Amino acid sequence: MPFTAKSGKFNASIKTVTIGTGDKAITLGGENALPLQSFDAPFANAPKVGIEITDFGMDHEPECIKKYYEGCSSIADIAKKAASFEGVDFLSFRMEGGDPNGANKSTEELMALVKEVAEAVDLPLVICGSKNAERDAELLAKAAEAVQGKNALILAAKEENYKTVGAAAGLAYSQVVGAESSVDINLAKQLNVLLSQLGVKPESVVMNVGTAAAGYGYEYVASTMQRIKAAALSQNDAQLQMPIITPVASETWATKEATQAEADSPEWGDQERRGIDMEVETAAADLACGSDAVILKHPVSVATVSKLIKELV
Image (cartoon, rainbow, N blue to C red; front, top):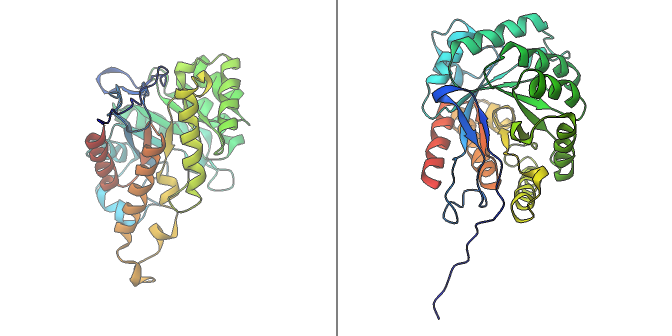
């Protein structure tokens, strides 16, 4: 008896969200098949890959990343160099120094850097906060104003600050709002509902549903993303049909596998290779589970994951 494959194409689809302007703008989402299963239905928009830089420049980066930015003397130089690497679709700028428990940089200093980056490159921008929800309410609202007209993704509004961030980014300055929740389908849906009630259009929302490096409780991330995609497509749940972006860099380059010096653990092998492996493995898993975009740090990781996407979609 001949085998007839059953189509995995759904009537529902993920909403499309555009980031950036002009020829370099990117569109996330639009798929009506499960992650990377383009054999069931063509993907209108392949997943995208971004590269991350921070307000610290190269000060806190490992040597294996610093070497790719030799000769860069300013944040603008670093941004231009990052944008030139193979496979980069967008640039992510993280205001790491805004954390009040860390460097606690002033809002004025950070906004000056945001504007410097925005003026230096023509790629779509993702502006990330300091991971302190209270401080980010101010920083991300100001950043939305600073990059007005860029159609940037402001990442991210959380339950603690969504009113401030959502109102500034999604309403006042017409940016794309990142909705960040903590690895739970119900929390992700609840935040989307709250943003909708605030007046932010679903077509202006991208979800960050939480992440972890591969091997560090990653099974929770995988199951959450898979459940979200399944509900969005098979159950036509409109409150979960926003595309997903996953910041991989800050998780993977904080693991011991990526930071332990080879001199301290020679049996582990080359430190740079380990860091790249952690980043690529995590990004590949995120894409397989449902991410429409990933944010990486090492140029080799960016090029590798970009090639992977082109081969699979």
